[in-house]
Image (tube, rainbow, N blue to C red):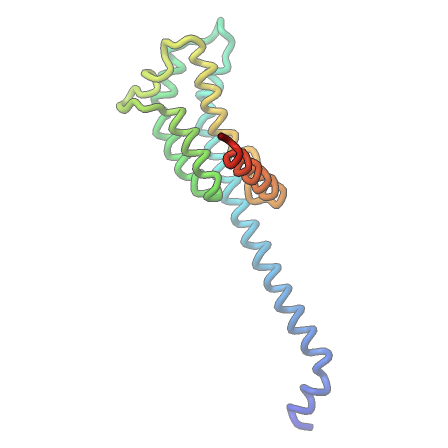
Length: 171
């Protein structure tokens, strides 16, 4: 028998085998890519949360144990670590969520420059600890849910559609 005859007689077996191998390879590629992306997100999110731990502990102390200057000094001293972690985490987010992180970070750090920028922004204001906590929580809120999961993607698309409808219907 020739090769052509062998192929033609076994075509019913060969085509499904090739199709199955191709589909299996694509599924394996997709799962591997999704797993790597998820791992990158969770690693960057954990690092970001970890850099804010010391500040969060100090800001959450009861009033009788809270020392203003120690907390604000800790915030100023760890600012560059926070900024580095935010930059790393930014690239773990999909493009549509990077803007939200950028806004939260800009709101946290304020417009002042220099080594004591956070002291200038927060210290001396009424309930400054609560304001700082709220600003930090706005940043860390993005670390709570993996935006690449199917459920989160569907949720984000729905929120985006709702937001577009609101913008179009506003006077």
